[in-house]
Image (cartoon, rainbow, N blue to C red):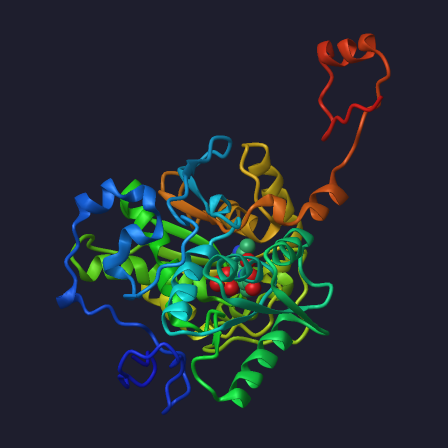
Length: 406
Ligand code: F0G
């Protein structure tokens, strides 16, 4: 169904936009056809995303790496009532796997041979792995020099065909969309960017898992790039509400990096549409996006939930990344934007320390090792056991990293 003009369409794996107004379509869960057996789902939580199969599209062939069922970890060192949903624990280290299992299963079930994605890195890594698992060829289109090394290495490891373009993610995505419109042939290449609503259907399972763990939080805080995920999580809660399992949804907070904040800036200025930019800049490469295609979905989700969009600086992001690291939770910079946003809203008194908050940590710290090492790598050299003993017993404050070399 079109969220803007209300036009309805039959289910079609290739239809993403409304013919009438051009908006990206929603997938409607027909509630009258859905019977939810919560006890069965709880028993089968370990399966991950497909434990929630009643909420997902029916596919003939499931391509899975056992994604989902990620830990919800209480923040110990921050004075508040916050939990981190650690999506880095997914098979390729990001929340993208939840959507990719659904998207690639559809691609396989309809007999596609290729999948294609433009990406800031995590979608590429995930698409490459799931395509490999499903026996499909994966084509990824990435901004040259714009994706973290861990993600690129994953795409290489899983055998994706890699195409680089100059410019930003937005250039890569419009190239993919234009080339698809030129092929015009269904059934050969299946696009799996977040314009593909079926992928977002997989991502909405984050909401179901949060609900099973802690019920309905006051706030869910999400880093925003292309703006699909915040919508997907809201939709998950909204479906639980419509099914009568909960009576309200959490306030959704979308966090963008200051230099790449087309939605948050417009929101704060009270505008009705984003301020797109062609030169997004942030240390958090995953969310370095100037023209989020899902902005309308995300805007609606945030508005309906009573939430807001905010910005955080790169410095705040890196500080938050470090804070999480010191709690044993390793995330990439984009993911730390949710903690940076939480701290900011606590400080501004918008969120109370008692409010139950879930921060979505979208991707694993190993994705982007360069950022970490460039910022805080120090080492102490030792050459004898005595020196090592002295360090062991030293009361001195520990440096960032101690590397022992002989
Ligand atoms: N966090 C991480 C680690 C991401 O990789 C992304 C998006 C986001 C947050 C934002 O999610 O786009 O749904 O608002 N990465 C995409 C990619 C764009 O290509 O991997 P969003």
